[in-house]
Image (tube, rainbow, N blue to C red; front, side, top):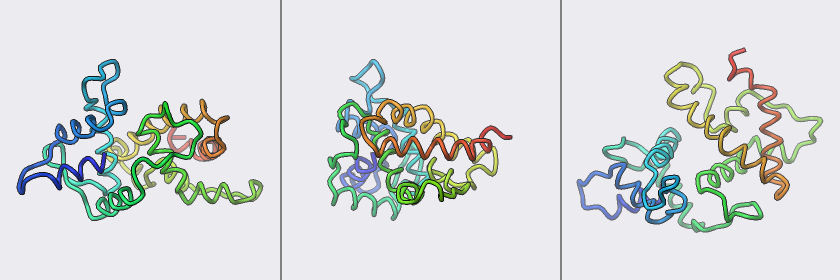
Length: 201
């Protein structure tokens, strides 16, 4: 998605705006199976694509809005990293054939987290997890939970995606790959300790 936006900006004539529709069609043309409407593969899924752009914007990789998107300096650094690594590098699970690109990206993000690295390399009897680890795993921060507006814009989209899409995928594939199993283990521990924050207890 980010690379599609980058290519659009680079290929545009000066002053031309890059809209949601521009990014959606470009990304869909490259990855039709990942970004098509459910049941209508000949059309891009605008809702999912806008959600991904919103997530990138909340992470400070993208700026602007549906009428004119741009890439931040941090976004350009990430694009350069992705291009240098190659966007077709395999994900760390045995069978990647049926995985959606957005779930793949989220799993790869979690595998790079400090809290995941800590969990993997620490004696399970000595692990001490923090509230900040819980939010880091979700992909946000405690600050995103401070107000109703921030919860709706920053926290809820990531939490819902994690719980409804990523964790179910991990449950189905935990026996195929130990990294996936470790992600599921860590989430279960974090949610047991800090899930009450979501429930409001």
